[in-house]
Length: 359
Image 1: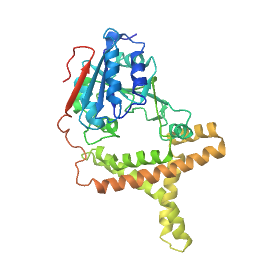
Image 2: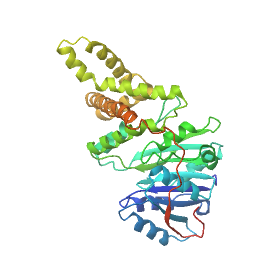
Image 3: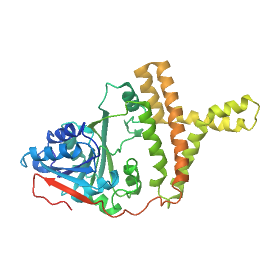
Image 4: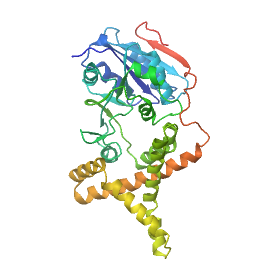
């Protein structure tokens, strides 16, 4: 077993229901206790998260694990991650969310990848609340991960990723304007090519997915509004592609209206119908990613239900992200797309079962 020294940053906001399970899974790692530390960053939670975290810290002997609690003043996810980076004592920094649970070999598998000389990695995320049909559906579509040589999808996700400290020293940490989603995408876009990435599907954590459609829609809408804020304005092609995809999705979303216009004799609707139809074909079967999603849906749900789910998901995702991205571009038009990180989040409370400082 490789003995890379790792700092595990657990970002938590109102995670009273699952935080203890998360922390216990980290204590139960098949990894030397003296080779990793746990840093809980509480982003001004208003539920029992602080009490649970501090009680857990007090209950763990320092010989079993080094664990610290840090509370900040309502900074958002990116600032919480940056506080964790500054508090970390080790050269490899891993991230897991406070509502996720790690498999016992999670750290060992991450460490093996870093022993091979990589600079940052992303692991596999399985659905935790499998009893929910909606959660399983979200896992099979929006959160589907693919780890194959010819097809890669969602292989670098915030609740299961790790980096060498040198990466953060190069790019300056996470963008502070991203308060809940997109922080890992923003960071990845800024990492120079000389840093080597490797997916590690053997490193598994379990994470909850939405159990209600309205919660799923709300989360995706909020993410789409902010999506343009983490695109590099100096890379025109990347920015153009991003908003080009938004227009493509919007064409798909407008297909029902287009059909209605054609039905009442508005010939201009034909142009939009052709554009929307071509866009829909690409989104439904045009890439290796979506073909793999469709295949797995058909295997799991049957041909008719699987195809129906795929079509409904493609349309819903296109409508939310296409329209949301364009609305966000207008809503945040006066904001810098990549602002410099603001002042560090204020640390208002710390607690530790060791004497290590919090920076």
